[in-house]
Length: 319
Image (cartoon, rainbow, N blue to C red; front, top):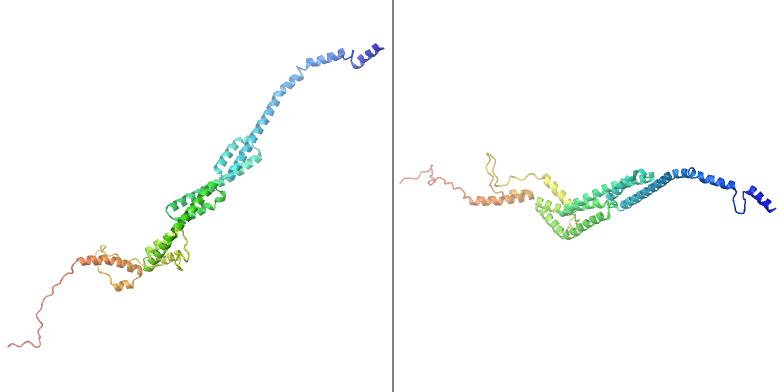
């Protein structure tokens, strides 16, 4: 009975003894093992290198895109710090990876490049105004220097911190100089007003222009409660100079051909009738003329002597 059951199991399940395999099963497994190296295993080995290459290429592209993101982030940080030249150099290095850049990365690069170029142009204009202002400051033209520094400071929103610091330092220097020169400017204003009232328009004009170029504002109290400002005096001087004719030819100059030399001193009545400036000029010219005239003795003209007049109608009687 047991033998019969074992035979049935061998036919039905392929098991000829407990834990064993039948001959058919062994033959099938052997055939599969013989065919595997030349068939499926060789096919898998054939496709393995191409799969590895594809995986390596994807890793390289991912690494380059990550590097591009780092460049773009660096360019953004440099732009925020107003380091425009460094930003443009970073963008140029990033664009060397053009083949692997995504469309969003390209758009960010284009936007940052445009902002950096605009910022660099603003920085150049600010530096030019700063240098010009320093030249005016060295020449003590404080008003012109302040205008240039104010122009540069108006661009501070797009300037690096060190450039803004330089502009602020120059403006502080102007304030310090103006404070030191305030008393001198007040004295100069008084002197210029005095020259103006005396008729010395050239000296008055020079003084008022110096005050104007200093950039120091003189209020009503600084002007000694004078209602006329510096600009007002300059306007008055300009009108007077435009209406005033040219001064007469100075004494001591060579006379024109056929004209007698003008060496006669000017009279006090004539000077009094002239405007104050012409009076001052005439007074300066009169002094050397008098000196020259005093060294030349006047010519003596001898008149013929005549005997005492006789009365023709009543001749003297002859005794």
